[in-house]
Every structure is written in structure tokens, then in C-alpha cells.
Image 1 (cartoon, rainbow, N blue to C red):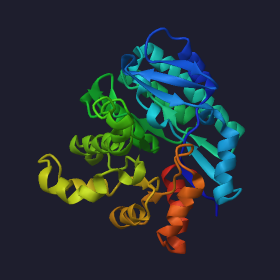
Image 2 (cartoon, rainbow, N blue to C red):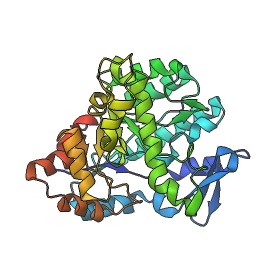
Image 3 (cartoon, rainbow, N blue to C red):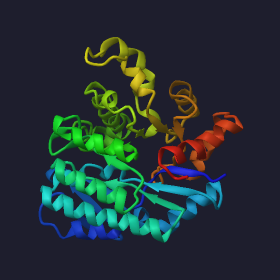
Image 4 (cartoon, rainbow, N blue to C red):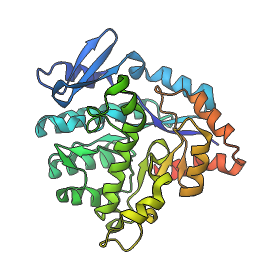
Length: 327
């Protein structure tokens, strides 16, 4: 049985070199062997040292933790949504180039590395063209969903065709925290507020918008992966049902929540056990958040959780292969 790491980060240097050539924000700046990625008109930046660009080292770290049959699934992580801060035409061209580089790595590391797509959403028709190219032509296995697009919430009505197409293609939307919306208001204490609760708030709000807007009701086959154990949502599902019932929805919000896949990127065994109880044994998938977290530490949390052999097999292989069409 192979282990599939559903939450792995690697970035092609070509994208950051391209962004370093921009005079306006968003743009990157070279810092040693890495970069700073400036966003929100230059008010915020992400430090990205060289470890983010070393795919061979990342694959080796994953294999050291779970064996030579380990497979990784690469996502955009906190970079999700940054392309939406570019002019629409530039964003589309940049996304095509980025996705081509991810697909190249997928071909080079066949059956060891799978990629997911960056799709800017400022222009719905152009987004559909990027989406189709990424999934149908490049064989990428998921779509990274930002929390906002060009200042609009992710549930803006014009994106309805986008969600319909993602559901039709059968690939999952991957919802990962960003720093775009809440990062500035939670920058105190050396960004400790943002890095802890702010990022979880970001992904949790994104999921709730999809539920309250009826996207998950209209597209019951739409697959969604929320990182970091589902953020705040499984622990406050009762309060969400009590205080946020929407007349337009035939089911309580928690029923839609339980359709979502969540990963084990949560350094606490209790959170893993809670996710299993709330979402069910077929909705929890293994992840490491490399290089933000150690693959060995991720495995250690699963061992600490006291899972059965069947639960281990589902989490580390069966569930994620199903949701990402890896079989």
C-alpha cells in the first residue's frame, strides 16, 4: 500500500523569476537563494527560502517518513489567490505557464508527484479556459480555490459556471488558508494571530460561503478538500446549525460540511480523532504541509491518535486516491 501526501508544497522557480521582472505588485524580490513575494499592493509579503523550490529534497523527506512508495500531491498553499491581484490577461498567461511547469514535474516524477492547478478567477470565461486546459490537457488532479477574487467573495454569482465545470470534471477544489484577507488585521505579535487562528478563519469562511450560497446544494457531486482538519468548522458545527440556518437550503449546514474531505495537517492527535468522528472514516486524508511541517512529525501524530489498521489505510491511501482520482 502506498502512502499519498495530499498536502505538499513545491514551487517552480520559473514563476518567481517571472514575477521578479514585474515593476508593480504583486511581484517577487530575490533574497539569497529564495524570494519575497509581495502582495496586497506591497503591504504584505511571504518569505520563501530555497527549500520551497527543491523538489528532490521534498520527495526524499517524504519517503524517509513513509517509505519509497510515497506519492505527493502539490498545491499552491498560501499563494492561492495572488494571481487574482494581477491584471486579468497577465493572470491568465501566468497561470498557463505555472500549470505547465507543474505538469512537467508530474511527467518527470511519474506516479510519485501529482500537481494541482492555479486558476485566476477575475474573468469567468478565461478561468474556464485555464481550468479545462489544466485538467483535460495537462492532467492536473485538483484546483486551488482562493478566498477572494479581485476583491469579490468566492460566492459571487458570476462564478456559477466555474463551479459547475469543476463538478463536471470530477476534480476537487482545494481550500488552503491565505494571508490576503485577514493578514493585515491580525499582524500583531509577529503574525502569531494570523499564523494560528487567522489562516484557519480564512479557509473556514471560504467553505461556509460555498455552503450558504447553495453551491454545494446545487452541485452535490462537487468535491472539496479543506486543509488543516477542517479549520474551526467541525468543532462549531452545532453553533453553525443553530445560528446560521439558511432558508434557501433544504439541509442544515453541518450536512454539507460532512461532504468535505479534510487532511491531517494538524499537530494534535485529538484533532485527528475529532475529524474522523465528525466527517467519517472515508473523508480524512493524510497530509504533511511540507516544508512547513515535518513528514515524520505528521506520521507521529497519526500514531499517537491510536488508529486502527483500517483507519491508517484509509487515511494514508484509499481516501485520497479516490478524491484525487489517483487510482
